[in-house]
Amino acid sequence: MNKAINTLHLSSIGIWDLGQNKGRESTYLPLKGFVEKGHIVNFITIDKRHKTENINGINVEKVNLPIYPIPKKGFHNLTRMLLLPVTTLVLIIYVLCKYYKKKPDVVYSHSTETTLAAYTIAKLFNSKYVLRMYGFPKFKKENIFHTLVRLDRTISLFLKADLYILTNDGTAADKAIESYGVPHYKVHFLKNGIDKSYLERPINHNLLKEIKPKNEKILLTASRLVDWKQVDLIIKALPFVLEKEKNIKLIIIGDGIERKNLETLAEKLNIRKFVTFTGALEHNLVIDYIKLADIFISMNALSGMNNSVYEAMICGKVVIALNTGDTESLIKNNITGILLDPSKIEELPNIILDILSNNIKKQEIEKNAQNFMKEHWPTWNERINYEIDLIEKLVNM
Image (spheres, rainbow, N blue to C red):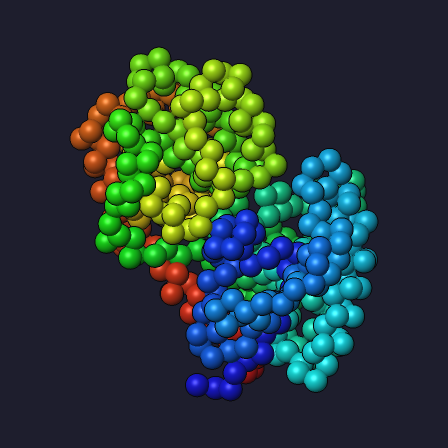
């Protein structure tokens, strides 16, 4: 192996965005992959208090900035803009003081708030600079107000990186970023991977007894509870499903600023006893829930291409998703899943009932979904190794 590459990663949120082993695997797994290849990984984020820890070989440092994390409500984006100079200065000073004797070969920015700091540090250390983006819901040139309110995003687009690694989340962010003059050869638009070991994973029988004591049909969704995930649409569909199928339960995995509103909505619709909010769960437990579900539902307003949908499909579940973004490249309607026209959301209850009452159709879609993912989707190891190869080539150019 070539010499170990020293990588420095800056982010405004932690490795797991919803707590230890909860949330975004697409951050944690590549970092872990770098460590397993013998490279050095230092991950710096911002938090209320200073803390250092080692997570499976990843050196994590939380830099003290009491105003973080910024509550995602009210004037969240405006607050981010106003705090950008403070965030940038704190990170630059911290890194220069701590790493001036062990300069990184590569500096990553994992969030738009840390882009200016990462870019500046890379220039000062003569390091390679990599911009890592996990998807931009509205990744396009906007009016002057949006440009100012999301100054961090605007800066991230105009500071040129040596390499851009984007998550292929179905929103065509690769085309959008190229519209800002970024050369095509610098942009790598990567799908998140899957773990094919889920195919052989046994049922969690203790969980089965807990969530299906009366052999209920399980509708499942798993995501951050934010407005554009549109979990409210699933809750609003449930009363119509219950008119014809009483032995049913909706389980909502995840947490976020919309949770209280969603709980209130279930109460108002008088269906609260049929809806379970689990909060954020460790990833292994999420898979256990998926294995027990009858239908997995994603009402993402931007794209149905996300980790929980991939995991549901590799576990052989029927996925109902909105036909938004590039979801059609993943789900073929009535073959590998069900696509719902966003303008016909009122059809969701009947689609759910049709799947639950037609076992032959359900089993056929389940088999097709699983086979499609086995044959056409990268594993996490393949995805991670591709990124590591890119970085090794970048450093050794």
